[in-house]
Length: 104
Image (cartoon, rainbow, N blue to C red):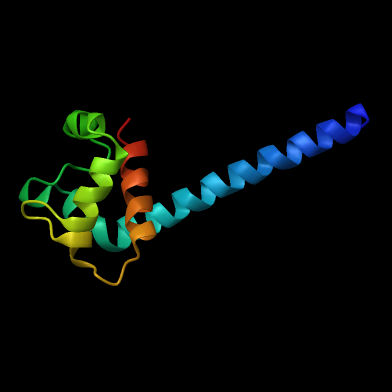
């Protein structure tokens, strides 16, 4: 395989991964804005505010699986899936990922 072929293939793979990550961020943002922001934008009922590094620090330390479980099943004042039973588990997980990535 020639150098230019390897370079082209590498570039295509990189763009593919970047595009997938961007699509996941877009899905997470869409779910956040349509469901989660109602509480997380202002901290209603103790919800950690969006992008508040201090509020999210201890939660992030519990790991993504624990955060997914909380978002999917509910905890305290937060109902399962933020009260949006119509959301898929993947949509909820994407929203968690979006919020976590903005709180790091």
